[in-house]
Image 1 (cartoon, chains in turn yellow, blue):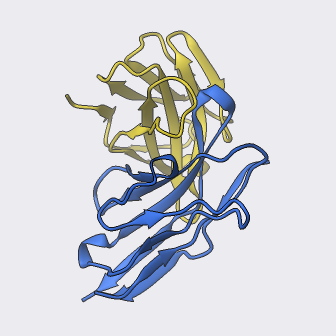
Image 2: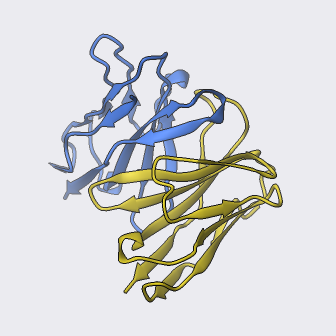
Amino acid sequence: NAGVTQTPKFRVLKTGQSMTLLCAQDMNHEYMYWYRQDPGMGLRLIHYSVGEGTTAKGEVPDGYNVSRLKKQNFLLGLESAAPSQTSVYFCASSPPGSSGRNEQFFGPGTRLTVL
Amino acid sequence: AQRVTQPEKLLSVFKGAPVELKCNYSYSGSPELFWYVQYSRQRLQLLLRHISRESIKGFTADLNKGETSFHLKKPFAQEEDSAMYYCALVYGGATNKLIFGTGTLLAVQP
């Protein structure tokens, strides 16, 4: 099993360009999450999904959109990239329900630079 | 509102010395806490969870509700322990969302 995979690994954009980051998981997990990791700020939740066809906002959703058309995929879109969106983006998945046993499984990350 | 605080950005110790990575939380409900670790050039992975009361790679963490803390400890540090450590709190009911601390970089010197 590949676990959680992310595409692409690296990307450089110019201000105003758009792009989509793809997250895929093969663990049949219901829940999926998108985070951004910035120096000195840890990981912050952008959007999340508790099932196919459903999405919700996290802590820092502005400037991003998401879609979960298939259970195994969770897409993160930037419609008009800004330098403030330069970051490392992590996707994660987990089994459903709130439990201290339900760890999140992370992808390898996508390093995005917006010039 | 929920919050996780890791006061140390960097903790540098010598091999064989004891390690304590601090984590304090603020949460109105019953806390569920994790420690995640990110080794160089690797993805974030779970180290341990408080509900299991386990010891992983020699690390332990005890939930202290009175002090609202979940410090990570290891009696004798190894060079391979060098990594970024994140404390995380579950919130948001059944959504299993995590709020992370800002992380502590542990550097174990030979």
